[in-house]
Image (cartoon, rainbow, N blue to C red; front, side, top):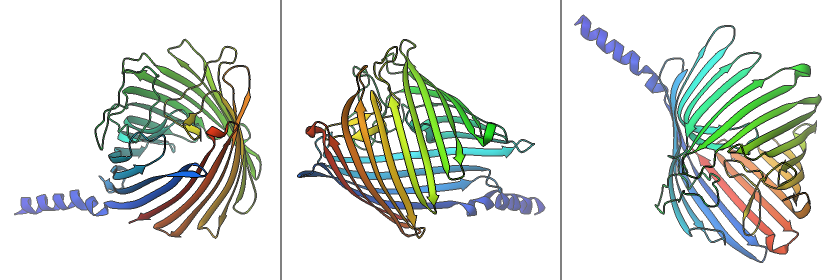
Length: 383
């Protein structure tokens, strides 16, 4: 009898954390009209998703997190591959553990599928299957990651491949395997150096397993901090290579001013190399478009951009922004004006679980064929 009671007590203790399981979901609609101002085409997607967080110990320092969704898309725009598309995707499924290591140091480990990004957000910014190890201290944060992309859903993640790639996306509904690469990287972040400035160093590599012989490697340096109490800056530069027989560069500089309350002003500029001197045309790993034209989404490559954005938060529930940017092409030593983009966004948190977004953008190309208008309405209900 005593053994039976002990066994029951152990089972109850072992499942106690189950009652702390958190779960929820969301229903989202994204309706956009795109194209020439006098010939707008509809693109609409509806998403239903569920998430879950399962603690595996009493302190919640070890847990499993998961998120999956179904999305239906109708796309009548000129660049659509399919008019109707169904997608089922799991963008998060990870086991995480964290523990203190003495002297205020923290060690964390994550394994599975989870979002990964370099500090520019331009090179590698997507989910990946892999292992992430991080050590945090008062003086430095160290992070190392290794993973695999071939099990991701290519309908939701766009990886840049060579024009003559051996990879071919399948025509399967719901799920198509992405190109196969082995991403690996490390980073050092120094949160407080001279004058309380922040320095970041990163290295990333992407080993090609598709038979394209397109291995990419990047080294990154970032510096950010405050120049005045309400004026901050952020400067980043990236040098990359394909198979160590080319050299390319991406650099960005931004200033953020908060003159009063929640009102913010951002001034920024970016450079993505073309064929200037010893440099080649820049290319990242994850598709990240700088601007959408009528016929194509332009990647950060062979271009210079500069922009200004104004933003404010009203009553803690309404975010509004206005922005403008100019874009210049620099395929070689020449720099040519390509166009200008204007944008406006509103994001209203109607309730804590209901959100509505409105956005409008107009790209005015130097060549009128590249001009494009986009009007969007987004609604999200969380539960």
